[in-house]
Length: 193
Image (cartoon, rainbow, N blue to C red; front, side):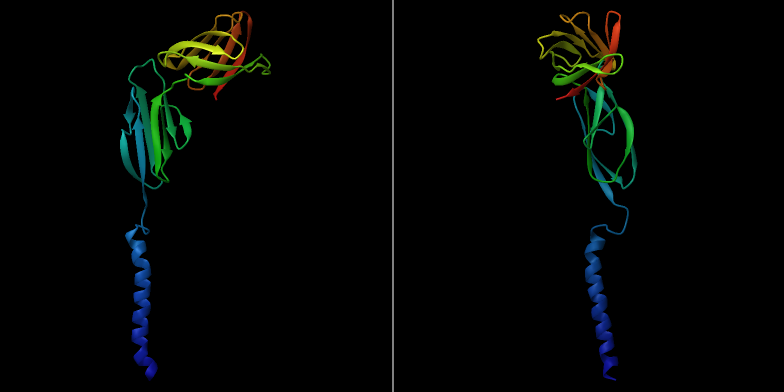
């Protein structure tokens, strides 16, 4: 009969222990759809959505983004979780994250690969783009060659002033395209150093 009198206090202690263990989990929203914070930074010259600031989204929400340059001649790039993306698209939220929308600025040193028509690399100089604006300027490479570049409206034109008639054209965002030298042609690409 002694076990009957100890039964209720033992059950009460067991329930109290379970409650004490579960209470912290309830307070941290463990039982429900988690929410995550997206921190958005819009750099000068860029407008769009989501806007500057912090935004809260439930787990696995698809977030659409769309950014534009204030000056239509500029090109926008979006940096999200270490990746580089074009100015509009979407992603799925599954953690706290950051997004930055900014103007494409190629003013830096790049490794340029120039391929012949068959795709075989002919030369791979290091090229440094400079200029007062992100739209155009001059460049020089580590071979002592130089010229001008223009990057308006997501198009890039690189014109050598002292290397035969080499003109490289392509897409500013991808930094790749085709080259011509009179009747000869091939492809090119560049990677930021």
